[in-house]
Length: 395
Ligand SMILES: *Cc1c(COP(=O)(O)O)cnc(C)c1O
Image (cartoon, rainbow, N blue to C red; front, side, top):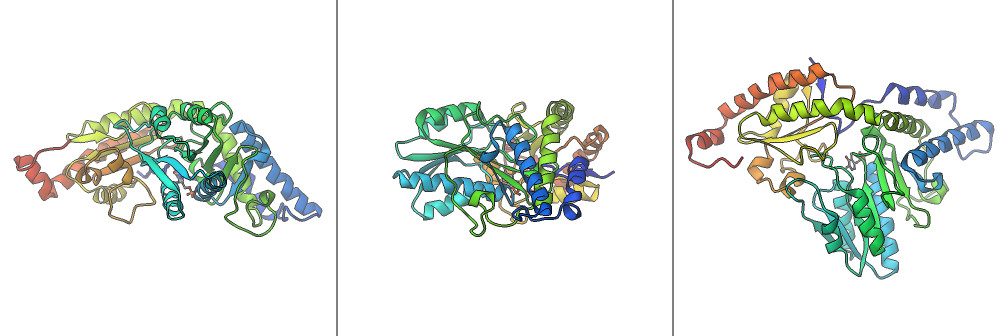
């Protein structure tokens, strides 16, 4: 059996998104900046897509900018808020230790440019509190950026509460909602979000398309200069097929959100129960306040990489955490921030489901996984020492 359980890394394009995209490759192939009819037909498609995102986020179309993905949206959001802060002499930014690298590495670059960054600690349940944010805000804070849902452990942050704290303090609030968009309700008005990033390929849209929501009145800085596309804030001929597919996927995901969550939550909980029944394992992140499709656990005495290879040999595509740090042997910064010791963080497994997964696939994972963990432990000298009592079990 083949099981794709890495939907937090990327998803397959939905049929609805593909159907919406296909005409845009040949029949509607004009440049939206052109004045002729083919160009204007493409421009209409572009604006229809913008309206879909605006409606679903409770924003207005003018507040929606299309980018090349979540990473670009994150970069542009942070640089825009930082530039605005600098104009007022405010160069302090509050974020968290478990953000995506698109945020963390942008913050590192801003630090080199003279900004000061406070990264909040991650509580043991993987949920940052609004009080932590409140305590970290200073006179010179220009921006708070806290992710909506974590991409590795799936925990959901109290975004509305954090938004209220920021609005009260007069500080801009950005959220990287890449993992949340299409999976959790988002209302930028009610949640007092000033800037928000999302990415199409995390909700069955195409890769290479992102959205940046920016509240009216907040000026964007350009990352890319050139033509007047996206009201002069993001140059380059628009990726019409991609943007149209992104909007169709988002519309579909939002329309089916409750149904998908109701389908996925019991599958997730079954996986959690099965994984944590393996001795010396631990769930990462709160069991309830997490994305409906996210499971992340550590197994003592094994290497996550070996586990992934053996799962792949059984047809199961999973992850040890983030696709972006795979390839490096460093343990996940998210699990370290959560307080897992290095040797435990190395033995992590993330299974991320979508509504395309079938219940039989969950049974299959639970059928093969315990044996693979045992096989790896039997080969491990570290496990031997743990079992002989030469070193204490940590989990
Ligand atoms: C995937 C992801 C990104 C990056 O989005 P891309 O479209 O791949 O650039 C940013 N933040 C989070 C939380 C993600 O999961």
